[in-house]
Image (cartoon, rainbow, N blue to C red; front, side, top):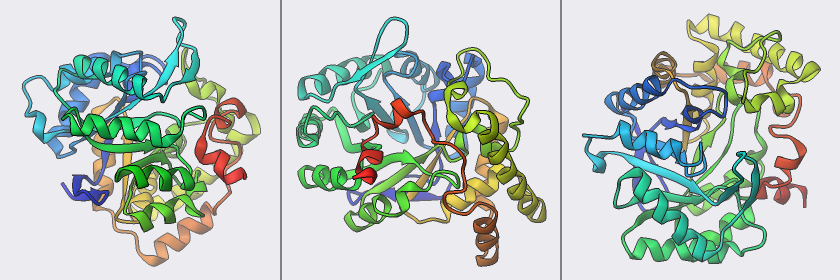
Length: 335
């Protein structure tokens, strides 16, 4: 498996990581045994980066990973954990907590659920506007000194927040949405990361299935599927976005690959400091994603992709207005 480096501290990971969020019901029911088999197959394939959050399924995702890693060499796996989201018993999001005392508390529970002595990359899931990022990162740095964490990560942080965090402790990577349909990081955030030597782990590479090539206008979201509330999957927005997918499909056919592989290869081609996170619950889709590593896009290919899906072509925001307002990365762009 090809590897890439995240951050200046030398953390090397597989060129594609496995995002495990979907294995805990955010896109509807997921088959647990198949999810575990998918994690194990990813590791067997050479994917060593597993991304999770302590609030995915309110601990379910971490327990799932623990089961999948049973009998495996822990040192051969890079576990990335997001923390800080607060939820009610009905699974409603009720806030974010980036206080230093919360860092230590969340970490203690994650270590127990994962069945490990340390977490490779630890990051606040959303920047807490009530707590200076210096305090949150400083607390993670203390956990690094104590041996419980290996690297600091960030999630959905704006350029200025990345700079402030990196001044306290070297940041391995910024996890943020980046795809052909979500290119907001290109103006300031991505250049800042490159300047500082901060890696980018890109989630939403397939725009939650839109760029997977199988979504259709008549496909209903299943019970519990968060996409039912996302603007890009609604009405005319969906129709316009599917037209972009059709344009990509034409390019994919000429290359003898799938739309998903084109979308993944495009992100891989955006820079050596970028590692796409593939969110899947099935082994067949995992194999498709890994196949994208063999796809080389020429300058002509890249130009054709840009014509098919130019920057800003996506219809609808990547989250609803309430969720967008929570993103430091979006607040920074608006100011």
